[in-house]
Amino acid sequence: MLNIKLNYKPVRNRYGMSTTPVPRRESPWGRPEGDKRQPVAHRCNDRAEDVVQACFEGNPFKTVPGPFKLFYRCMRSKPGEEPTEPFHYLQIDPPKREEVKLE
Image (tube, rainbow, N blue to C red):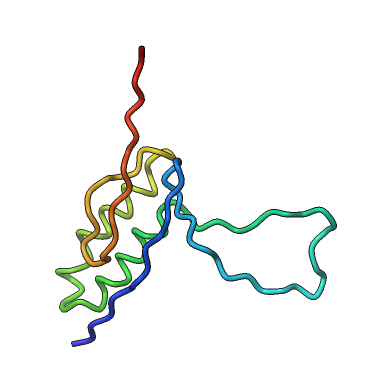
């Protein structure tokens, strides 16, 4: 049995997007002057990693459906409305929704 655990704790901004650094390649053409944009991981990237981890945990027909349902719900949701259920195989905290208080 292959036992792989991802040991990182992503930092989330207020929109629920992971601020985990994204590796970059240098292009032979470079970037235009003044372009300071940096790549950002997709808000459902951690859910996708949970699905990949489930593929290596026993029988994939039994381990993948749960994480895949959460990944699908995350992809179909609007930013800030991602599912808050815990991850099945990743050892990180799920995204939290910030309650807006109306006065």
